[in-house]
Image 1 (cartoon, rainbow, N blue to C red):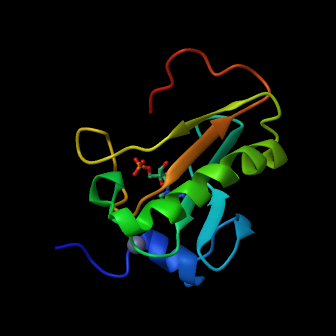
Image 2: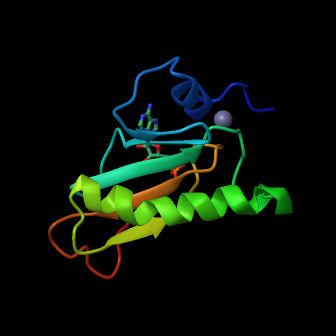
Length: 117
Ligand code: AMP
Ligand code: ZN
């Protein structure tokens, strides 16, 4: 069983520090602690959703809102010419933190076709 609250729930609740760049009542965005590109943000729902594979239909507006936020968050963080959105999902997808998160990855330079971890 997963420990509750998880590390991203703790960040959402302000119980552990993060370099937050955006927050509202439903979501929070912060810098990834191990960035793989000049811009590497994580955008999470404050509500604990384990992964993209565990979505309920009622979550669709929240996910859509998150998607709609990505462009401005990326631009404001310095990814002015585009970015990559990655949602690692489950063990096959390489998901390590079991709280839904969008990786917003970019930089001043093109990322290249593949960007592994
Ligand atoms: P994933 O493999 O998609 O589950 O990615 C989890 C991401 O969370 C990794 O890129 C980690 O560097 C990042 N991460 C883990 N703990 C923290 C933390 N306390 N603050 C910021 N980012 C974190
Ligand atoms: Zn959580």
